[in-house]
Amino acid sequence: MPELPEVEAVARTLRPLVEGRRIYRCHVLHSIATKPQDPTRLRGASEGQRICDVERRGKYLLLRLGRGCITLHFKLDGQMVWFEDEKELARRANRGDDRVHVDVAFALDKGVLAFADRRHFGRVWAWEKPEDCPGVAALGTDALSAEFTPAKLAELLSSSRRPLKEFLLDQWRVAGIGNIYSCEAMWRARIEPRRRANRLRRRDARRLHKAIVSVLQRALECCLDPAPDFRDPEWWYQGLEKILRAYGREGDPCRRCGKPIRRISQGSRSTFFCARCQT
DNA sequence: CCTGCTACCTGATGGC
DNA sequence: TGCCATCAGGTAGCAG
Image (cartoon, rainbow, N blue to C red; front, side, top):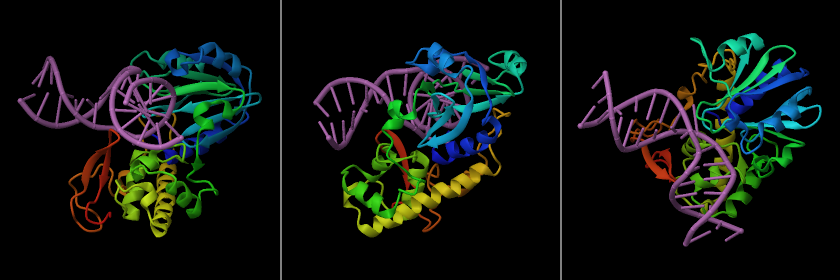
């Protein structure tokens, strides 16, 4: 599911729902979701705490507590789900006809905030501070932050000999870009995905920077309208397909030149691009 | 140090 | 219909 825009949309939508609320009970229904941490650590760290802020860093979602913090990562399929109260949670979580898959649930003084990932890739962890989470500490420049400038991107590009596609997926350099938006950004910037990062010219870097920012911003607008609906586990980011120009369009005509979009494998993931106008 | 590959899980889809 | 292979928006960890 989520790259930077999706997680940002979740953070913004969640903030007014949970900010200032107290977590009075934490249920870990599938303890794989806290691995390798012990579920008791998450329970101990969260119960009784107030949620002071909701934040996004790269593709991580952070719940800042009065003391300590919780990091959530959705990986491919994770999502947040909302229940009216613990009664509804008890009735529907992983059971019944209108069952909803739930891994971890935080019962608040109003409502229940839950994390769900049927595939069990996603994680919910507790820390004293965000930087104690190795994944968060390792994040590079956030793609939607003020520090992400054309000059910064050019500097980062020059220090890597990897193919551009793999460079863009490396969260340690630029944080927040995933498989979909890397393809989209390269299509917009008209750059061939297999070109080595350090071989890009300065104007390529400028075009790429502009493409990354506009693709992510465009996607964020889509993700916010309509906004995420945590009450509906089937809810999905609507209308994203209509902004996609390369991803998932193998064989379809390029929207610029008409040549069929190609799909290749890079680092065991699919890359979609136009072999005529991306050079 | 850098890079490339696999494992981690479950579910949907398409070919036979 | 059923079975199997393949694919999926991410990343930690490990070998070379």
